[in-house]
Image (cartoon, rainbow, N blue to C red; front, side, top):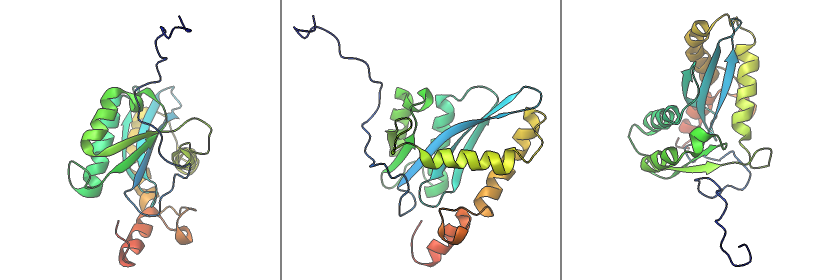
Length: 200
């Protein structure tokens, strides 16, 4: 059957081709956003799951959706819409913005890719452990867990759910980022870029 071309092509998932060259960071804001998720394990055995999105230039955590269940494609849709509304005050981006993620099913689902397209986002996926992987999001997760989760009590999910918004706000407003000029916080970087004539 193979010799005569009668076999079906292998399923490779519903996704667009990878178009970035391995360098995740961008020189201007709102060109590429990256997203990923992580878990916080509580002392009583509960698990809080967080899906978030960062701008690949200014490193601001533009949005985060939290649950004690699994991360669903609907949560990713909500996160995409939250980011578009926050950055542009509209329901669609004025120019194409790449949405970079790993190959999790909540990102690669046909409905998610189609929803992203409706918002003007270009879905981009990264292979695991490669130069073009989602390194910025991975680094953020490790830093966030080290600087916030590990230094606070995590007795139960309710405690974590109450603290997470403050942790994200602190990271955006006050936490210095090594990748930003002079160890600025994301919002300090955004404000300084705006005053320097570099639009965000």
